[in-house]
Length: 406
Image (tube, rainbow, N blue to C red; front, side, top):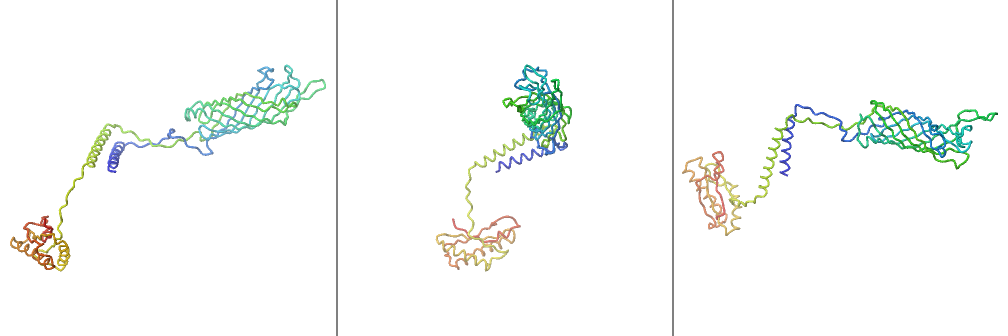
């Protein structure tokens, strides 16, 4: 407990020294991202993304179609939110065109007058709603940095599309005339995964390159065996607008200024350490020192005090001596010494000699009167001062002491 107190005192002194030295400087408060980031409210960190690009469709017979003829337009509009600097989500509407080939002329999106190697060309517009879960890989692996120029975001998602194709009307000459775009009453599901390469233009705007692969449920055709799962590789360029607040807050921590010169402080700390070590050494020595046995001086059995110039016993004194007499009679083998005292600060020597003798004789006679054998008692006087504490305390020197004889 003492050691802990010494250490605490030393630390307090050191702290006061530091405060005194840096008193002219103010403590500043800054955000410290190393302490973690604070979760923003639900209304924060929303964004909207618009993008357009191309899709490249993969079906079971597309290898027969010229590769440059398989590209089709695609577009999307999304609203999303980042829940943390790493995890977010987005919900959007999409347009996706698919160019493929079909085995027969009654499938979804078939263009009946266009064939390649015995397959009918198809063209279908897909309109749908999708949802993606996003992970910002850059913030995850490299730490959050609101001013980073490039961020890579991986996402997975799913959704559904409504299919729209064009009708073709057979003419009397055997040719087909393009008709209207119609709902095919065909619903397909999609799962997808992609990587968004985002380039920061300013606080609010990002330029995006979105690379994605989607798995698509096959269209409903007349032959159920043709209802397969197909794929689509897509690339988009887009812009993202980030709504305020766009960043993430970190805990506020104090930054204490360094003293301009620490040499004096180091010297004082070293001196305090040395002083602590010395005090610890003294404490150990004190705790390990053997306990000295001190025999207490034997106190008198009783002391009767007198006013100045008085040797007569009062009623209270006689009552006290009555109790003392009982103690003496119960210890018949113990002898007692009665000593008369007078102060040497007042009165003459002749008066003090008389007072000492009268006082001790009065006590002696009272004890014998109370039945104490005279053989147990020895009456004497002492011409010194009983307490000898000075003239201010002379009342303590006017007394008769009763002690056991050695």
